[in-house]
Figure 1: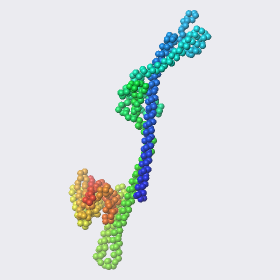
Figure 2: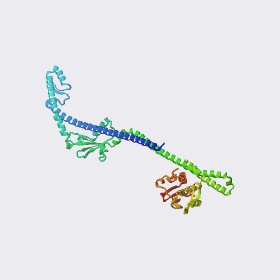
Figure 3: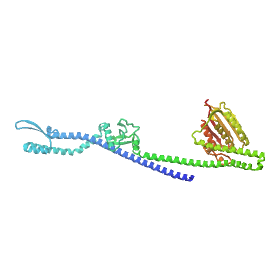
Figure 4: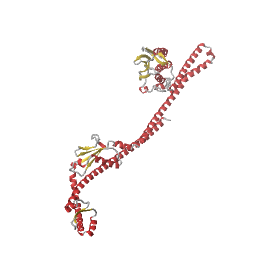
Length: 510
């Protein structure tokens, strides 16, 4: 798949996912706003209903007291002690034989009158007059009812709020009204005067927390004079949790979309990495073909020369051809060994033959062997092996290959403007560690390439030209082997100023 096609698909999928997330976020925001509005409306409705019930309680209190007084005074003034209440008619009389008796008749006055008309015309007449008086008083009471209501209003506003309402009644009424609307949520409340002073409150009410949109205010007894009004402040500490629990069904959908987005991003990253790896492998194959082509051609040409009778008769020519075949065979074997090193990167752990060696001695032998190659290009190599304790547990073959690869890179990436200088050192570090540095004055490495030079198949721009041979495996092999040996490797470099590789290995425990 072309890189342009991957980018187009990536952009389209990104726009799709971003749009989907925006729609879900917008939808959740709208639902939450609606839930907040519904909650606020339900709370206000409950507060209004609570205050109305408190007003009804107060009105009932005054009506019972005032109406009872009016009825009592009216009945006593009409009947004296004979009619102590409207629950019946009390009548005292004396019989013809001189006996005195008290009679209380309960029920409809009209029926009582009908009953008495046939038995005692005098008594019936008396009951009829009592009925007329009762009806007259009833009309009187009905007429003064407006005056009683005005009296209630004028007296109620002057009573202390603690006598008009109490905490238990407010809590009970408010709980009932909220439950009726389905708002089963804990609350705290306080009653404050017009100046904001708290008169009484519920057990857990905290004025410092009861602020903002979680607090609702409702006037108690709104018909009171403005300056004497009291207010009910209700605080819902779990309002936000209650609202978001009601829209929690949207969370899984949002989470699934987010997971899909993460998977999509990961897939795109993997796709680009695979494409990059494919490009590196293609470069590797091209470089490998070129690396193999030269020794194979040289060996083939030498073999053809051996078929020439004149060449076989010349010992000097045979010696030269033998040397060429031997050198090119070594070169070809070396390249094959590098290719075989690729199998190590597919294993979780390399197979190593660990043994104790003196790193100073091993490095000294490598430097002496490599000195001829450095001097061939007009350079010099210097070794300062100052470590007092250089015994390490390593695989000698791989350790040798690591040092050789770093020295070989220094020769490959030498600067044409100045003679090559290589400096190899060793020194002791605290914590029973050994530091080995290999520094050169070559072309250096750009900062952008420093983070990638240990990646498999990666080669800097200079390495992509055929004047510098390689497969992009050397430093990846070095990094892996140093890690397998329990050490660490870092690099310091400035472009066109040289490079320094620093290897730190643990000393042998023995």
